[in-house]
Amino acid sequence: MDAVPQFQQALYLRADIVALRTDLALALRAADWHGLSEGVCNHFSVAVPGEPDLFLLNPRGLAWSEVQADDIVLVDSAGRCLAGRHEIEPTAMFIHAAIHRITQKHCVLHTHMPYATALSLTVAGALDTTLSQNAMRFHERLVVDRDYNGFAFDHSEGERIAHAMKGADVVFLGNHGVVVCNDRIDYAYDDLYYLERACCAEVLARSTGLALAPSSADIARKVVAQLDAGRLQSELFFESLRRHV
Image: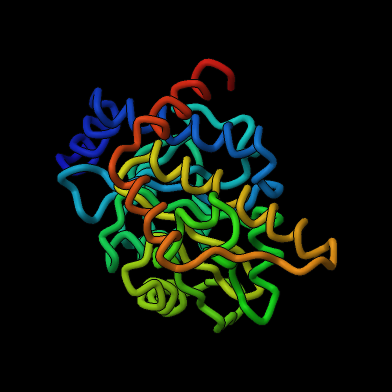
């Protein structure tokens, strides 16, 4: 065996990478538990610290409910599986590799979760961040990419999505789903969960046919600042999932 595979295998088994694989697998199982999964589709990824061209990704063909740390694969930006016992799905590689490389986001979560996807089908293309408190936490943190082009089967589509994000933490992909990013897995999962809760509340409120009562942009900005001031609640939420899922 040459030096490169030996290095990759050693990296895959390094204690901090095992911890990342464990947390990524937990996030996937939690997402399934919360009803955010869809068949064996969609992917979560996290960049490998100190290795800008490498990231960890859930494999092809496994339901999120069954993913464990040993199922997570190590992938490079060219889409090659470097370590792990499973294959990877092409669209995952094209979308996630481009977002990691172009936006430098550490953790990238892509889902077709129902209520967020429902809002991606509307003319607005996303949730109103002045409605619920949960929605306000995403005020001025999201963008809408309206240019749906079918499955991302090449680098160009993944790169187009990454550039459309314009550095935002959340992108609503028109007629498709959402991508949520953050610098930590626990924070990213917390955002993903509350994004879907906010979208659910908006869809339910709109379904009543009653007039909605948005707050002001200033209040929404205040909520964002309050969230940024400390995210202990996000950490506690993820640790509670570790005990339950």
